[in-house]
Image (cartoon, rainbow, N blue to C red; front, top):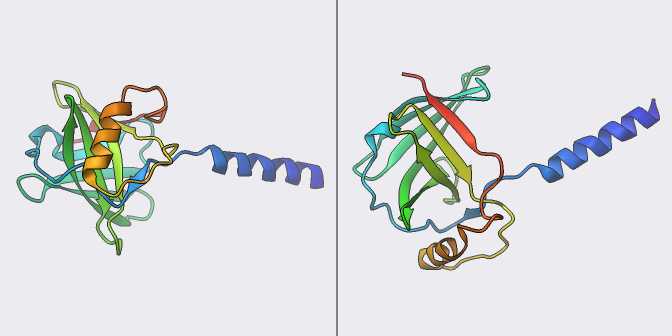
Length: 162
C-alpha cells in the first residue's frame, strides 16, 4: 500500500510540475487600440470539455468582458481583455477583474473565417524575462514569437455555442 501511495504521490507531483500556465506580466503588450472583432462576441464552449462556458461581450470600443461560468457550481469568474497585433498575429491580453493588481495573460488568437471556432495558444510560462514596459514586451514578442518555444504545445479550441 505504501508503494502505491508513493508512486501516486510522485505522479501527482510530476503532473503539477509539467502543467503549464501562460506567461504573465503586469504590463500588457500595448494599450487597448484594436477595435472589437464582432465574431468573438457571444457564447463559447471548450471543444475538449464542457466544464466551463464563456460569454464574451463588448465592454467598450476596444475591450471585451469575459465571464467564465462553471458548469458544476455556477460560479462566475470575470475577466477583461483586448487584442494587440504584432506582424499580423493577434494576441489577447486578458486579466481577472477581481484581482487587486492586473496580471495579464497572453494568447495568440486564431479564428475560422466563419467565426464558429476560436483557437487560443497560450504564450509559454517558460519565458523568464521580466519587462518594465509594454514596449519591451512587444519587442520581445516580435523577436521571438516564431520560435518553437514561444507558445504552449496545447492550444485551447472553443466552439461558438449561440
